[in-house]
Structures are given as structure tokens and as C-alpha cells.
Length: 560
Image (tube, rainbow, N blue to C red):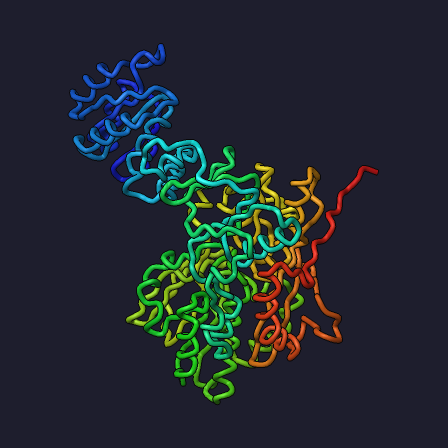
């Protein structure tokens, strides 16, 4: 007898037999719910037989039969009534367990968010995406018609989403395009490193979302609850349904602060900060200015993360400020990296190592932050070096800059669009979904093996727009993305190592070496980052101006 745990109080199972009752009791269950009608299969015991055996074992049993493939609203009410009356934990069963999992999902719809329900049932081995719309509708059967329909729907109004919308409209001005995003403010996130380094003001990195949505594009100010790709539908919180001909998925990723025990409770105080949040980046600079001695930790979690160089950028700019003030000699700078290398593209490492030596920073590899005691100013790391047993190490700190663990958003991870790791599953060249031909993805949420940076999205948006337009015209994909990403590594105030690379770590410099040699610290690269890139972002990328980002023609291999 196999039972599949959904919560501590409810598990589901395929058809059980009378001789399973003692096993069920031994597993700690106190009640059984039968969701399979009698007589559905020749080999199934009747409910009366199951109930008799259950009572003899001291278990309670309830009969809530559901016709296969037809879970009604009344069935859900009856299941809920049974759960209310029976002692927990409860084991519900049907032929495969699917009807029982469906009943639980629809019953819980008024209490739990949709992504949580989908995640719980998925971990138990049941895919509830087929009833996602009903779950979003509070468990009740919704209408099957959409509330609105567009030629192209874009999920996410970040850098990738808005840039794609602008690029589409510039190519086909008569398209009906909608962007779905619940945020009222749009952030220039690459600027937060400079906020934490005292170069930018936080307010200069934010604009209202309404001011940035391209003219002629509908902004749907709502959160996505689920996808129904087979029905070309996006379900919003509250069960509104948006239909599409083509879909672009670009919601960014989730910063999982709660994955580190104690971190959320101490962020913004006790010397714990992060440039990965708008409201915390100014605190980074405050701490840097105030610090005169002690230990400063800079953490980096396992990949993937957005802007893989950002954790060490914070270290370099902080150490440079201490160096200029003459206090660096009294500050112990420690870089705590869950990975095994300083930077993933080896050509840039020598220049970075020169600054590691200049700032007398200690590099600690294979060290992943797992908990923080802010009041005591102690951080605990899991050290998992190759070929050694993992161990826990606790380090005292006076200041700690944290880069949080990062995942795909919950509504993406549990959707039919995700791969096994939870990222949107795309072809790495065309950025088209591998299963659903009318869906594309870009930015941090998709699974192409590129760096998750704004510069990557700047190249991806025209590629997606070009391929969608080709698809609308009845053609095959015409553009490809080469994995380009850029990481301006701010090694000191006034100099940057401009890392530019594509798939496989291939160098992809945008400028001749006599202008900017990306493998060496450069004032020209700093000028580009500080003075030019913000304007290129606000006035170029988000407005569909594809400066130095024109789509690359798709290379099609032909048989020889």
C-alpha cells in the first residue's frame, strides 16, 4: 500500500485492500475516506468491506464517491464535511489517488494560495494544473471563457518584458499586446550595486510602472496564479482568465530570503544588508561609512543567481572605500562563496585576483550560508568541499552583505512550462518553449545556460520579438541568441573589469581592445556603467531601441 503525503493531516493513495488496514493504522492514520464508487472495478473491495475492517482496527471511515473525471462542486463540499468530522491524519483513496488529490486541492482553495496547493500535490506525485482555474476560483467551477484576449500576452514587466513589448510594437504596430505584472514600481536593478557603493541614490533607480509601459500596450496590474498552455490561457489571482495567441514568460526570479534561517528577521539591522533589495542598498553604504574595524562578510549562494558578479562587486566597492579612508588594515574582509571559483570565466580572474590581493580579502570556497543570528552577529555556513564530509562553521561578523538563494517563482516552478529544476524550458537559441510552440521566455526565469543579467535580457528581447513576428507571418524562427551576458565588475571606484561572454564562456566583447579591454580594469568601462548604461536602459532598451542588440540570424545546419 503506497500513501502519498500532501500535508501532515492529509495523504492520498491508490486503491487500498482490506488487508492494508493494519498497515494504514500502523502508519498513524486515524481515518479513511473512500472517493471511489463501488463497482467501478471488478477487483476492488466495496466500501462496506473497507469500513468494517477499519472499524475493527479502531479507524473511522467515510464514503465520498466521485465519478472518474467529474469532480463536482458538491463532491468538494462533501469531502470538506468529511474532513471536518473525521480525526486526523486522514488517508483518502480512489483508483490512483488523483480524485482524492483533486478534492483536497479544491477544498483548500479558499485557504491556501494556488502555487502552494500545486506544489504540495506535485510533491505527492499529482499534477493539479488541469484544475488550476477552479482552484484559483476558490474551488468552484468557473466559466471556460476568457475575460480578455490578446495577440501576445507578456508575463512580467521587468527589463525583459517591457523591452520585448516595445520591440514587438516597433515591428508590428497593429498587434494587440498585454503585459501582466502586479508591481506599481519598476527598478533599474543593476544600479543597486552603485547605491550600495555610495555612487547612486536609490530613488534614481526607480520609476512608476505606468510611465514605462509602451504606448498601445495594455497593462494588466495583477499577479499570475497559473498557466493553461493547452487552452492558451493565463489565470490571474481571483480567477480572471486572459487568453492569448502567443505568450512570453519573463517574470524574473524569486529571492528566497527565508531559505536562510534567521535572515529575514535581521535584514536591515544588526549589520546585515544586501544590494539585492532597493530598500537595503542604502544601508550597505551606511554600514561601509560607519565601519572602522572588525570582520566584514560577503556571501554568495549556489548558482544560478542574477548577476553572478554582484556579491563580489559589493566586496570590492566596500573595500575600496575602506582603503581610501585608511581603515582597511583594521577590517578583515571575507568572501564566503558556495561555489569553487571566484568567477566562472577564467579570462577575467587574473584582474580580479589583483584586487583580492590589494584589499587583502580572504576567499572561502564551498561555503554556503545556512543561518544567521543577527543579535549575536554570528553566521553559520555549511562547508562542503569536494571529497570531504560537510561540516558546519560559525563565523562572527560586524557587517555582512548577503546575496540570497534564488529560484524560479513558485507559480513557474509548479507550472507545465517548467523543467525538472523549475525553470521555463526553452530552446537556448530561439528561446521558444520546447513543448508549446506558441510560448517564448527570456530573462532570469528561463533555463538557457547563460548569465542572468540585464545585458542578457537586452539581447534576448529582440530575438524573441523577431521570432514571434516570424511565427505570426507563418514562418520558422529567424533569430538566435548566442548566450551573451555582461557583468561590469566594479573593482574600485572609477574602474571596472567589463566581463562580456556568451555560451560556454566564449568572450563576446562589444568594443575594440583599444577602447575597452574587458580583461583589465578600465576607467572607460566605469564611465559606460555610471553615465551611459542608465540612459541606454531607460531611453533605449525599454523603448524598443535595439542599440548594439540587433537580433543575430539563426544559423541553420544543413545536411552535407
